[in-house]
Length: 212
Image (tube, rainbow, N blue to C red; front, side, top):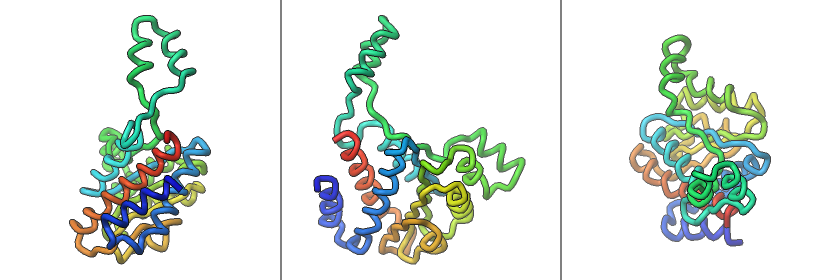
């Protein structure tokens, strides 16, 4: 299977990740199934893991490894809407996979942190955005970040699929999430270095599924 080749190539480059193979595939299928149901992926984390959340959304919402041209039907609609701008829109917009990071909305995040319980800032956004069609990915090197745990618990109450990315111990997220990718490292920088090729691989698999 061409999609699975991305995991094979990952494990050739990073043999230390062999033990994560089945969880990487399960994470892909959870997100794939959400997109098939017209759901979205929500992503959250703190610090470097927050930056990883932004990175994941960036890879999903635009071209990553392959081209994602619009359909002929969509191009025609854009050209019919605007004689002035239709050609530009039709030729340069790209296919996107709906993903939202919960780390970026400064107005909402700061207002909620000031007015309510700061650790619930991700959970509040999950409650606002989420539904049973969608999935949440929570990234925490320890697996014990309170705000990520609260977000996952809220997602599960909404019927969402939940995916964790942690270090080898897994923490609370290992037992809480439907799928948890526990990379074999203990120190935060080493965990984050392994998270990046893992989520790049998942993003390439999703891109291949929907645009290959």
